[in-house]
Every structure is written in structure tokens, then in C-alpha cells.
Length: 203
Ligand code: ZN
Image (cartoon, rainbow, N blue to C red):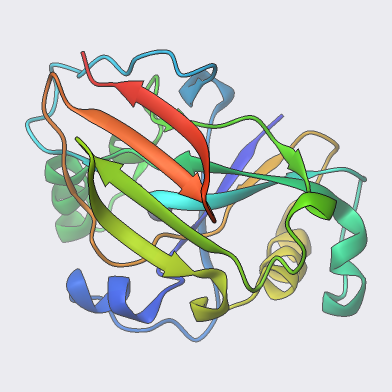
């Protein structure tokens, strides 16, 4: 399986990193070795001094698809969850300066803690979900999926022009404003609406 992650899908987050608002979705891949499940801890790596959290709504692809049109995109997923797109911001900034790929900064082991997936029937409209992240009990990121620049159907359409989507692939749909660093000893807790979905420690 593969993880496809969307960059800059909330205007306030693009602005906080001084990035232009994109005209089409930006995506990158994270390998399956980034996955952390079952609230297992994240171990702070020694190659970075600036690991940052990015909370994102995630969805799981349920049907093989290529060149999916936006109006049929909803048929290709039925479960969602929440995940953290951990980013080594110091390495990413170096990559950006030099025009290099982002893998060192985004694809390292453990860079994608994620919740269980829950059937969409439990939530209703995927484009009207509140979600948030707490760092040590204080809310640091909070948004509604209606604020996405590109809604999920457009993300699936765009990505599937380039990549065949397969059953079990996971899409990270972008982070809102409020990203920031973590340190050893921190606790991250993520919610969709009022349901606690993810709760783990940085070690
Ligand atoms: Zn992200």
C-alpha cells in the first residue's frame, strides 16, 4: 500500500509557511514504514531538531481506480480517520531551498501515526467535519473540512490521474494552520468532532 499526502490544502496553513495558495493539489508519498498504529509512541529521531506535527483527516481507498472523475470519487472510499503528517521542518526547509525532494523530511520511519478507520456512516458529510489536535491538553490545531481548498473528490481525481489508487491506500488530506514542534515527553491527542481518535506520546 501507499500513503499519498496533500500539501497546502488549507489557505491559513499555506500562509503560515509563506507558501503560495496552489492552483492544483500538491501531493507527495510516504512509505508504509511511516505508519504508527494503536497509539504506540513516536520516537524522536536524531537527524532532526525540528519535528513538527500536522494533523490531517485521512481516508482509506476501498476500490481500485485510475483517472477517477470528481463526481464518482466518493465511491472509492468509505472509511476515514485522523493522522499526523510528521515533518522534519529543518530538513524540509533545506530541501525546499535546494529544490530537492522532501522524502528525508516526510517519509522517515514513524512519520505517519494514525487512528483506526471508522465508516463514514458514523460521521455524515466528509466536507463538514470538525477536527482538532491537542498538544499536552491544549488545542493547537482546529478546523472544519469545509475549509479545504480542494475537496476530497478533487484530490482523488487529481491524484488518480498520475497514480492508480489501490485498496488500502491512504490519503492524507492536508493540514490546517497551527502546526508546531514537538519535544520528547509531549502528548498528542486528535479528535474528529468530539470523538477522541488518536492519543500517543513522543519518546
Ligand atoms: Zn501535511
